Amino acid sequence: MSHSPSEFGPLTYIPRCYGYSEKGSVLEVYEPHSELPQILIMGAIHGDESLSTVLLSECLRSIQDHELKSSVILAANPDGVVAGTRCNSRGVDLNRNYPTDNWSPDPVYYRNRPGTPQNIALSPGDVPGSESETKALIKLILEIKPSLIVSIHGFLGCMDDPDASSIAKDIAQRSGLELVPDVGYATPGSFGSWCKEQAIPIITYELPSQEITEMKRIHIPILKDLLTGRYHKMLV
Ligand SMILES: [Zn+2]
Image (cartoon, rainbow, N blue to C red; front, side, top):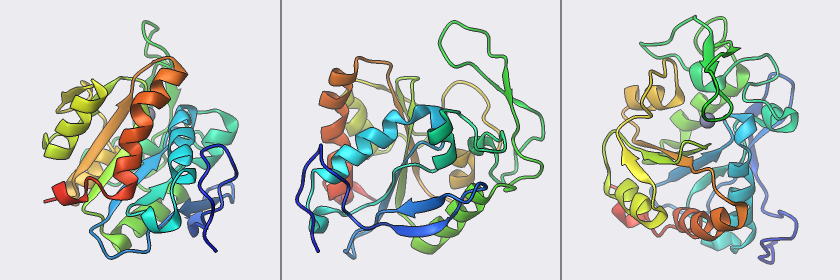
């Protein structure tokens, strides 16, 4: 059954379960019915950045089933979204839990708004890849072998692509966000570091802190183009 597109109605596209969170929540991926090279777009690996979930959901709800050409994860950390926390239900920053050469057992310190001290401590996990959200996402990625991953975060307001790919350049130009080779500080065990080690291109799309209507006006058309295949021809 195909759904009737509506940015504001229910989400009727049927996802696939790719695993379960530490708390038992279903981890879901929305998949295209196409053979095109896949882009995987994901939101909310940090649960307190769930605006990414809202934006991706509105995109998904505004297109027909057959228009979807990328895989979409609305929330890679669903328990964090429900709790409103950066971490998962066990206090782990999933974006520092990946089995990479640079993984560190040291606590992760972050700030939740600009200008405040970076002193909120989270765990990177007992061992690399300790969390079921991490294990499930790794298994999914090794299975679908995306040609590009776009991970949406907030609210540093930049487009992080160490390769400065033509897709990242185009999105940076359209969104007015600065294209940067890194976010400016060390991120041991991050999802991005893991992707790099797997030779999977990754763009970290850091939404700006911006008024919500303006945010939707600028970023939804870009995300929709990523979902519907407009950028597939730029994949190398
Ligand atoms: Zn983040």
